[in-house]
Image (cartoon, rainbow, N blue to C red; front, side):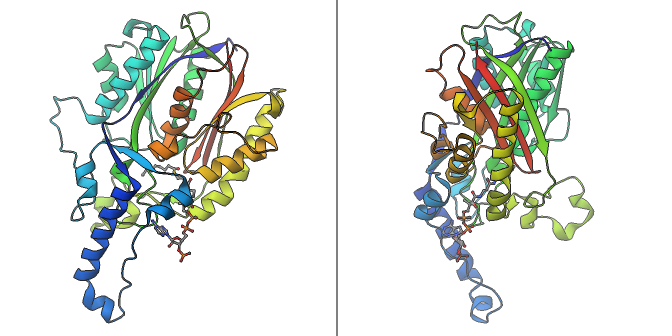
Length: 373
Ligand code: CO8
């Protein structure tokens, strides 16, 4: 396989953000309204009252303190609890396209690429705002890129699975240079009326350029030494939203048409599987865990990352070794490990090794071992 490198990354961060305190205040106002509306059923014992949320619980259970969002007012309105994102006409750029262009422009600039250098655009994200035409084709057109484009969805592992697709395409010669973007509008499919999950996600977009080492001119490049993907079927993270919903009106608007999970089960089942995959991958590449300078892990839960890093390294990782961005961004699905990679790599030296790893619904686990050129 010819050498493939990551030669640029980009990050679009929404202008608006919500702290835990703001989110909890809105949820508790909603719960109060709900309990008042259902007071007779609650008094008769037919219904349980909604319990208040707590900012202390959120930070302790997840490590999340804040999240960026595409629309704050709609989410914090206790009578709405959904982002307010007005539909656009077919002649206007769609919202995911706008986010993608901002992140893509930064990635292309750092890689020293213009549209004519790129011949494949991949949108890898956990939810796409429409069925077709592919978001990737709209983004390709907006950037003036020739060649081909398509969308893919592997939930939280979309980006790492996308990077392997990019690497394979470059190595096989079906593309010269790939732009992979992850426009994650997680608040669009988060149930802000559910105390167990209302705090988990935020919005963001990341972008990565992958190309053959022979064409790369960027000052900073990372060779992809290996990529490993794994999927194990599980219903513990699920979203039943889809085009068949209209075939049974009784299910429309039900909680299972948004993100639902069994958080504890996910934690217990996914952490050991991720640590095992990374350990096996390093072994296959004859790399000792002690040689790793950095682990850019999926950003879902701080304790999960600490546990995975401990299992891989055989000791606690420092914040430098396994950087955290979820305190500021929350879980941004597939973009999380890419944000960490984008923000926490400036200190690395030529030859330094790192692992970029995601895990999530499916279950899906994707890991790439990379070396700074
Ligand atoms: N405030 C106060 N109390 C609360 C709250 C709250 N907000 N929420 C729950 N509680 C209570 C519970 O009711 C429970 O009470 P009791 O003990 O009386 O039953 C108690 O607190 C403990 O609750 P949990 O057991 O649920 O708490 P945990 O310690 O397990 O923490 C977490 C919950 C943070 C969700 C944790 O389980 C976790 O992070 N697990 C891993 C989840 C994960 O990583 N999932 C990955 C999913 S992401 C993915 O794959 C992408 C999907 C596609 C994107 C979707 C975008 C929307």
